[in-house]
Amino acid sequence: MAKSTLSFVCQNCGAAYNRWQGKCESCGEWNTLAEEDTSGSVPVSIRSKRRGRTFALESLTGKSNDAPRLSSGMTELDRVTGGGFVRGSVLLVGGDPGIGKSTLLTQATSMLARAGHRAVYISGEEAVAQVRLRAERLGLADAPVQLASETSVEDIVSTLSEGAVPRLIVIDSIQTMWTDTVESAPGTVTQVRASAQALIRFAKKSGAAIILVGHVTKDGQIAGPRVVEHMVDAVLSFEGEGSQHFRILRAMKNRFGPTDEIGVFEMTGLGLREVSNPSELFLSERDLGSPGTAVFAGIEGTRPVLVELQALVAPTTLGTPRRAVVGWDPSRLSMVLAVLEAHCGVKLSGYDVYLNVAGGLRIQEPAADLAAAAALVSSLVNAPLPTDAVYFGEISLSGAVRPVAQTSARLKEAAKLGFGRAVLPESARGEIGSDGGLTLNSVGGLTSLVAEIAARGTPRGNRDTAREGVTEKNATPTRFRRENS
Ligand code: TYD
Ligand code: MG
Image 1 (cartoon, rainbow, N blue to C red):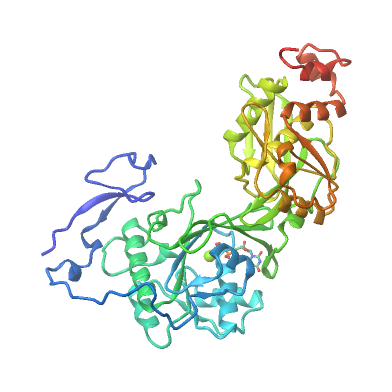
Image 2: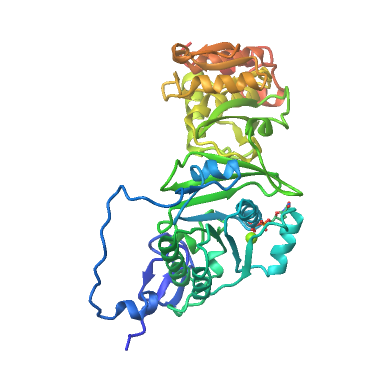
């Protein structure tokens, strides 16, 4: 008889311990250990001593009957998956509750069903009537999607094994699924892992593509399904600020495609609308002519995206000034601030610094350094930057502005959106094929850009100039005087 093995499993990362403890040593989370029976994580039938059966080995050049990829009919979704759903692959779509995962996947299954493919939507969270209601709101009630409200993995697998192989199966969500092979409660790590394993096995065997929906905890980790991340072929994360309509689908892992592409959607009353030109959307609510904003010409995957960086530099009342950043890497902000202090004579130690990327986009490129620096200095000296300029370039620790990739794509996008000039690294000039008619303002070092912005500046009220012990008249030059001059 199989011995019952009770162990304490971290519900965040899946690490198992013999005894209870307050903190998981593997992921550092507190109070995440729960008692689970892990004896059955391998089904008894598999654990029995049976002789292995032989199987045929195949060559790489085998033929598959069907196109390996199936386009979802949604360009933005295809862009992130790398061109459509791969047969027999399993995708995990994670995101905060209410962000629109069910909406997105209802739309995707409906599109496929309308195109004549067998598409199945299994909801473990909502009743059939609720899913129908959503489909009605989306105007998709007529799509021949096969719908069920089920949570037993065994039942789902037997049902779907009958008839034609479904091309796409959506499981909403993996946390609600349970399998007979393990005894833990639904939602525990052991159950989630075993259910995912069973579904992945079914996908590989049948050739159906499966999408697992996973909920995300507050700190951005997919709870429970985090242990599933390494088992699936692709992990997509659906992000967005609750108050804004933009939604961004981002590939975190993809065995069949790139991981730097993003898909942009807008949540409307009629579901998610694809946004094929994100720059227009991100710049649509621009606050023209106010100090502290700079437009960054970035690249997301293969596509240029223009987005506004907003900075606020305000005198601090705290002993340690605040540095807060949304949508960008905080350590890069610290680096840019350090370079501004060390090489450009910009004193920021008495100021709180806030930086925000408009539209809820998360920028990962170092090319945003120059735009961030321009926005920061613009806010500090209270001088609006030219409204028709875009900025890009990486700043090195020495204060030099370094070239970045895909200069001409960035310039072309800026020209398309009606910008008149670009502030870019000096050494990039050689690589520019066509500048799209933009005036190019190349900078070799950060110092010259800072001086240029400072020259436009109007000194602020007495309060902050007095703080530095400089008079209004020479406020700007003192603030930007180089250490050695
Ligand atoms: P949903 O897809 O249920 O989110 P998730 O599955 O990620 O939890 O979306 C829920 C939110 O989306 C809800 O707050 C309402 C909003 N929504 C719209 O704004 N328009 C729509 O057409 C639909 C279907 C939902
Ligand atoms: Mg949902």
